[in-house]
Length: 414
Image (tube, rainbow, N blue to C red; front, side, top):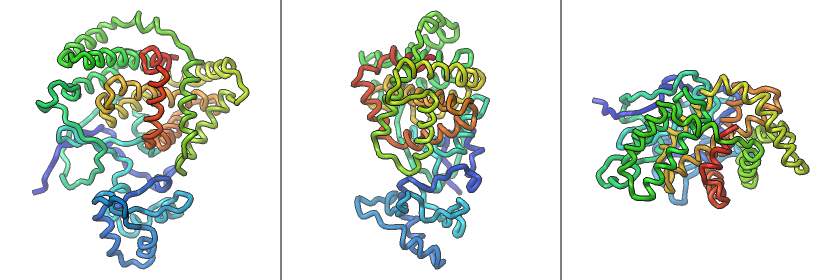
């Protein structure tokens, strides 16, 4: 009898399938690809001469701290391209030997797996153009299914967490599920604008952080109930309307942190992101000689003329972006620093994408689904896959005193 295990997954996973040579980009360059031990041993037994020669030449043992998951590696060409990538944009290993001969990394990408209390959770990273389309362009609320899968299905585990054991009685992880349900439900509450949803979430997470800082973890349940009533009764309208918008400061803040990424080395698969940033700078006419006030005015014009009219009718795109991020990143318990820091990270993520889209829309004289997908998958490759950049950005936020609800509101509100 085949052993089964529980799997929690967004419904979009049923639809995902690699589109191969039809993809406008590909995932076969710019990465470090580890080969697991089982796959390496399969490669040693390949007899087909052409492929055997390629495998012998380009798959090398990992001599530094090898493990069963990181047993060997593919030696990429100097331009970052995989030696098994062919002109038709397909993998020679997959073509000649079948999918079961792919290493675990290639077989599983762009899927991401977490384990929460023994339950596997599978979602996707948006660094693949097809997953970006699948996740972002669904007009319906993102929903989740709990299903059974064969225990033999391969996963690369990103995070593991325990949330309800007795040793966590005074730990926020004990309240992970109530906090997760509250956060995603609020994010999908279309009675409010996305801007208001994110600001309410920040006000709430600040309160949760205060409970943690003052050893009042047991008050989190009551706080969730209180905020559910406030949201249902729409008692925050006056507070939300009084929050000012400052587009110039917003743009300057996010551009400063985006510039940090350009001080670091880019991998070859970041070129599409570099192109997006160039379009952003062109769209708002940003040069070394530009006055901040003039650039701020161009940014505001781009927002009003291109970004706002499109997003007003397509807020679900960014709702889906953030819901997927929350689920994949185990929001709000991923940061060791606390739940409000997790909130800051999600705001940085959203605000960088928003800023770049505003300038790109001006450069292209339009904003549409194709442009958003192009930025999001490019951003994910260059930013999300670079943990050092995100950690450094967050550190800069704290060092500059920007880790407050007031600054988060500036980044969110237009």
